[in-house]
Image (cartoon, rainbow, N blue to C red; front, side, top):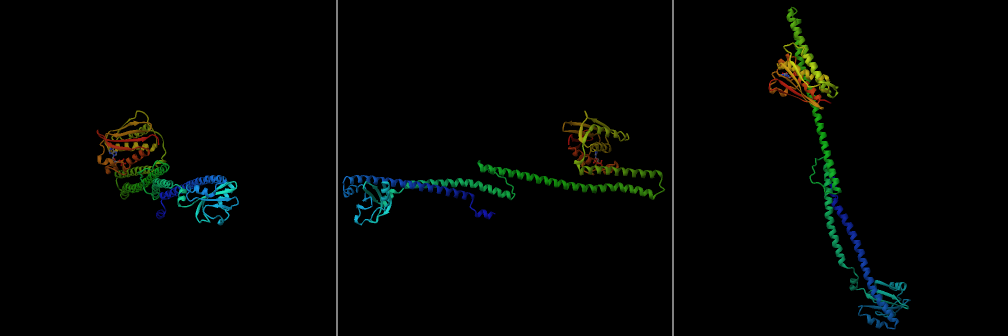
Length: 482
Ligand code: ADP
């Protein structure tokens, strides 16, 4: 394609040559027409002068003046003048240059024929058969005679009759000037077209184009600027689409990675309680004589492990449900005060030494559109954690902000808090600070991860920090409408 465009004349050249061709042809035609007109005008003028002479000669002939004396009287005014007198039949009676007896009939001479028909006529240039010279002839018909005066068509006369050369040079100069102006005008136009063509070629190759110099303010410039703007928009849209695509791909890969990690962790987490239950049951079977108190203790421990297994399975199922189809989770109007009251009521069922006081500071009912079960697990997990790990005495649930769009809630305890180094990780899956204690408390390491995901599904975020007065505080937002 590049070679084709190199062999081809550039747009500028073609346009310039076309313009040049048209203007030269136009000027040529104009000059030729003007030249012809001027020459015709000069010939007519010369003919008029000779016809005036003819008229005078006819009058003088009629008055009886001899042709010789007529010739002598006018030769001074018309150098080289040749006078011929003939009758209407073409017979020559007098010729100032030749012997009339040797002259043929002149009826076929064009000026004579014209004079007979129209009264007068002329012939621009003809070789005289008798004198072998070129002449300009003007003839006039009288009542019985025809008078013809002729001037030699020599260099002098042809120069007189030639059109004015000055005009020719003037037109040539104007045309040259026009050509130079045309060259620069077409070069400018051609330059912009070449720029547009280069742009199109680069766009075809998919190059990133940042056009800096704008096109001029004319129709072509407007079209070019629009094309460039559209291309820039297209580039932007394509880049945005690619970015979104990459993001989606990354999210998809991340999901797969997390799923894999979850499966590995679940296997690992399941092994411990299952192995413990297996151990207790094997001991019981292998020692039938074991005393009743120890038998009971083993069975109680097995029961506790099954409780852990159940909790683990519940948490995993919640997490999987959230991962698999957060958009499929059905939402309905939920009053948060009711959920908090429900969770607080459950706390009342705990033995007094483990029981924390729940203080809820909500000025009025707060309703959000959400999943009742997920919102319950948010408050239940936070409450269970405060009960299990904080060593505090109170839980404070406060409404920090509430508007049409969202609400912000603080969930705090007055316990020991968490060492700063752990804070950034507590929302990770299976992250536990004190593994032994967590397991003992029936923790799975999934609680806060469930909380964060559930809040994200409700269009919110959660953060955690240690309170200056002691204890851990979670601050989270929930969007009211999905
Ligand atoms: P688990 O399901 O095992 O309870 P979580 O994800 O809920 O795990 O919590 C992660 C860790 O954060 C817990 O192991 C615990 O050590 C710590 N933690 C959570 N809540 C509190 C709290 N209110 N006070 C002190 N430590 C806490």
